[in-house]
Each structure stands twice: as C-alpha cells, then as structure tokens.
View 1 (tube, one colour):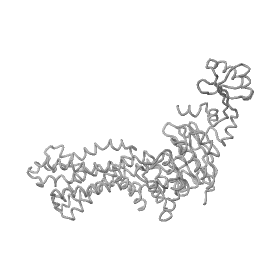
View 2 (tube, chains in turn blue, purple; view 1 turned 30 degrees about the horizontal axis):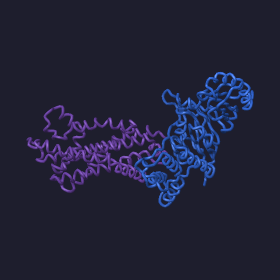
View 3 (cartoon, rainbow over the protein chains, first blue to last red; view 1 turned 180 degrees about the vertical axis):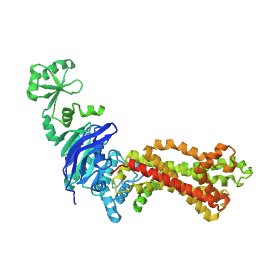
View 4 (cartoon, rainbow over the protein chains, first blue to last red; view 1 turned 45 degrees about the vertical axis):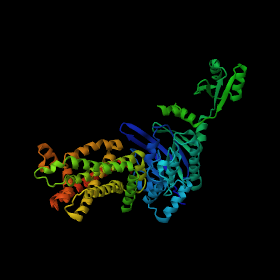
Length: 318
Length: 255
C-alpha cells in the first residue's frame, strides 16, 4: 500500500469570520503515520482548523499543506489524498450502509467488482456486515460512527481527519473506534489528525497532542512530555469530619498550592516540599483523620489548566 | 459528469420515495383540490366565452403546477437537510462537480413530478377529460409537467442553499403558492373582471405555464400557448439553475 511521504504542515494558518478570529495563526506539523490529537474545548477552533485542512473552508491567512499539496491552491489533490469523518456522522437516514458506501465509492471512480469487494471488506472491518442492508436511521450512534469511518476509508486515503469521532458514544463503542484508529496508524501507516474534547482519548490514542484555546495552540508535544512540563502530582484529601476541612486546608498548604477539588475535599499540587508519605505522616501527627486520600498524577487537563488558567470542563461552560 | 449526475439523482429519487410522508400528500392534495373545485366552480363553465364545458378539464393543468410546487418543497427541504447534517460536506470531499451535484439533486423532484403528472392525467382521463391533442398531446403534457417540476424543484434548491435550513425553505412557500393563485388558474384571463387581478395574472409566468398545459387539453394545438408555456418553464429552469449554481459556490466554498 503506497502512503504519502508528507504529513500535514500549517504555518500561521488563520480564519476570520467577520469580527471573530476563529483560528488565530496556528503552526503545526504532523509527521506521516503519526496520530496527532488536537485537543480543546468547544469553540476553540478545532473544527475550523479541520475544515481548512480538508479544503472545505478557505483560510483567511497563512498557509497549509496536506500530503504535500497546498490546501488553498490544490484542493482536488488534497481531497484525493485524505479521508474525513467530520463532526456528527453525516449520513442519509433513508439509505442503507451499503448504499452509502456504493455512492461514495462510485463518486471516487471505484466501480464493478472492485467496488463490491471493497464494500464487503469495509463493512466487515467496521463490524457492520449484518447491518449493511439496513437503513441508517435504524443504526445506533456507534454504528453510525463506524460507517462514517468506513466511508472515510473508501478510497484508501493516506491521511485521515477525524473530527470528534467519539462524541456521544458509549464507552464500549468508543474503545472499539480507538482500536480501529490505532490499528490504521500502526498497521497501515495512515496519518491521523484527530480532534477531541476528551482528554482520555488524546492520552490513549495520540502520539503527539496540540492543545488549542481561543484559536491558538497553547501547548504541543507527546502526552508524557506535556505532563512532564507540569510534573507535579496532586494530593486530594477528604476529612472524616467535614468540620475538619479548615484545619486540613492549613495543613496541606504546607505541601503546595491549592488546586481544584471535589466538594468536601481539599487538594494541593505538590511543590516538592514532600510527597505522599510526608502528607500522611503530617495528618497522623496533627491527629487529622482522613476518609480518603487520592494521589493524581498530572493529566492533560492539568496541562490545559497550566497553559490557559482554566480546566477543560470550565472552558466548556464559558 | 453524466455518471456523477446519475449517482446523485439516483440517491435523490431513492430517498424521496422512501419517505411516503413526503410524497403521498403532494400526490393526493392536488387531486382533492381538483375534485372540490371541479364540482364547486362548475357554474363558471356557463360564462359566455368559457373555453370548455368541463371545469375538470379546465382545472386539471393547475394540478400539475401545484404538484410541481410540492415537489420543489421536497427538493429544497432534502437539500437543506443535507446541509444541516453535513452530508453536503461529505459529497464536497469527493471529486463530484458542483454542477453534477445540483442537477442530480433535483432528481427526486423530477421523479415525483413525473409520477404526479401520470397520476393526475390518468385521474383526469378516468373522470372523462378528453385530451384535445390526442396521445401526442398527452405526452407533451407529461413533458411540460416534468419541466415545470424541474424549474420549481431547482428554485427549491436555491432557497435551500440560500437559507441552509428546512424551515427557511418552507417559510418561502406561502409566497410561491400566492404567486400560483394570482394567475389564470380558476378563470381564463379574458374573463377575469377585476382589472388589477387580470393585470397581475397577465404578467405572472405561472399563467402561461398553466395555459400551455391547458391548451393541450382543451383547445388543440396552439403554437403561441405552447411556446409561452415551454419558454417560461425553460426560463424558470435557467434562472433557478443560475441562482442555485451561484449560491452553491458560496455554500460549498471548497478550494
């Protein structure tokens, strides 16, 4: 299987909608065969970036190449090289899964026996063989997403864009889709550009992650690099008696700065003045009984918090 | 290009006919109106100068037009749904040409228009309408009806591309219905006594589409009526296609 030697590159890519700058000049580079996770809250500019990179939206400034082709000047070559499953599975409820694949294959110029074999193979790969002749309106959310993925793969693209592919899916369907995306990159060398608002998804799937907020990339690196930048675990303690919360706060502040905690709990990000054993010893010395003690390793949400001053959940609510 | 048009049209026809809720009312409502009007307004045939003694024969051509209007609503709403769900983006990511997309997309309206025309004509014949121009005229009626459905269908596509929502398309249809009613649908123009109504009906292209069809049913081969009927129908297709093509470039702004 021939794969493009070129991945994705954007330099100062911008998109303005009247007074709103949805994407404010981003630079990124995705290597061939890499899974790049594009993480950010709703409205951060993820989908606008994907629309520009997939040629559906002309950029207002900057430049980008996909599979070595300029997205603004070589749209048809870009489209021939990419597959895309955009936000919300864009399917016709009145067509069957197989009819979707037949239409998509035919529009890509795939005909006859080759088309028939390909449809059978793709339906099998995404686990829809028995549902292939059912109308899509009878599909579950997970089945729609899997069909969406099969449609994106019909012309054997070297680069795959997945815009929030698991939004609204149950955990089982989500895991199945992750497995398939991972397999595509690992076994077939497909470059994957994946937008998500799920930290876990980026953490599990992506080789590298770019965090976007307000149209700008605020951090980029492998998940472990990004977490290492934060580097400090968090200790959260739930006192046995709620009346002890104030005393607990005073005690824990010795170990680091206060950070977000569940109601009825207090948490600090350890700043190097001791680790979990020291915290436990201090609680014992002060005779402060804890109902629960949790140690959180740094997550991508902590990275997001450190880079933007907000948690990803908080940013969603804005 | 032909292959692409065929593929898109095939999908449009299939999805239209898989939604009975959208094509049964447009098929039956004009028949009900035809039944009510041909009975209720039968007395109009006694007016001096009325061109036929069968109001059913006189009114039958309006059913084709009304059916075409319904078909255009379906074409518009279906495309608006494609925009809304992102299906248009899916198609935009394939090598499909914009023109193929547009022409293919009216396949459903054309298919429904053809079915409606056959049903209305058959019902007319069953209830005693005599086609003055014979079998050849009947075929020409079907052709003109399909052209009218294509014209209105393309107008529906333009509205969908302009508004991007099914509600937006539907909100425009009362205006189009109004345009069909201020025409020669119920009376020949020379028998309309209210001057402003007659003037509006005279400048309304809908009158000429109805009169083209009507001439084939009740007054024999009338070159002028046919030229005007076919001319305005083709002009509607050309203008709507131009508007829709321009709007498609805005809506599908792929590079």
